[in-house]
Length: 271
Image: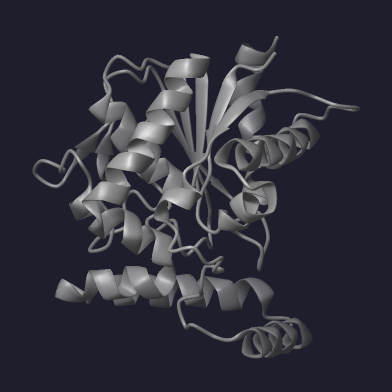
């Protein structure tokens, strides 16, 4: 049943440190992603859906495991204070909604400071977009995984959606029936969108030629997915799904892969 290749997002270098190899990291992640998706599809017992996870975090790392930082770069105690304050005030979704609104406002006023924002928001995003050697090695790793497994479906989360998009464009021989992007920053102006390869033409990108269908799913408050819908900046997005995952935990692969919105798109490939 394994017909899916996954492409992970930021903050996964710890898998490499724990496993001691990229292959070990990819397998550890595959087991987790299978479990997350199995729950979303209403299964019991063990399910095998992912043939492999395209692992590239070690190619971006400086050798240290670093957690992705929030927009405000709050330290852990400050984050906990904010969370508890919001819970006590009953302001959960309003807080995250306000944070996303602020993030969008800031992005519109970045001008030439987008690299600095990317470094603050997620060092791995900045490393991928500004270091051509690392960028090429990441794309090569993802291309090799897709070519080796010949999947019908690629599910790409967070930064992985950017790497997958560029990889599929750079390797038109790679053909898949379905691309699902989760919590994607592909349309993030002044940080990601204008730096894509190939570059958008007249303000629009396009679905990679080897992709038959593209589904984009984003949480309504995900500050990495700005804008949450990609149809306004990319031609060829077939379906947009706006979901409500969790007022705090709105960007993790676990929450996205456990989302019921995936079910109708994946079912035809799992029978």
